[in-house]
Length: 214
Image (cartoon, rainbow, N blue to C red):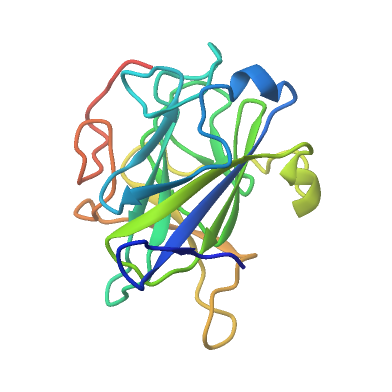
């Protein structure tokens, strides 16, 4: 497993690898910094969408929302390990899914170390490579020639809905064995409104009362 190393310290940076698939990939991904390791501050959300004024990472596709999704680093209570959430910023249908489970508008899902995020005909295989730096991480966008859903044995989505109101997230169930999570199991859980997660209206706290245009 390749883990990025900070040039300023001896700390290893967690790498978030985002492998993208679409049946028509070349022009759609033309504005993304493919195959480049980008150093980012842990507090900064990584937004993906079609509009440069709203998102840093752009998909050249009018079928994509102005803001499609956001990836945000976080730490579980009592842990220094950097993990990631995905937030659905689009009202468009079909909506965002994580490992075949629907994530409602402005809701979030905690990503396991290997997660398949889908919206429209896009498939994003998101892989977390663990480091020990707490202040920064790196993101790496890569193109995939085949759908990652085939590799993971996922066909049609299960369409299990996460709540459309309130705040909800997908999270790993308790570890099956001591010392690690079971990456194959997901459960739905409520996330307190005070959790430090991104939103349309507030960079620090997720709220579902505000509305913005897609």
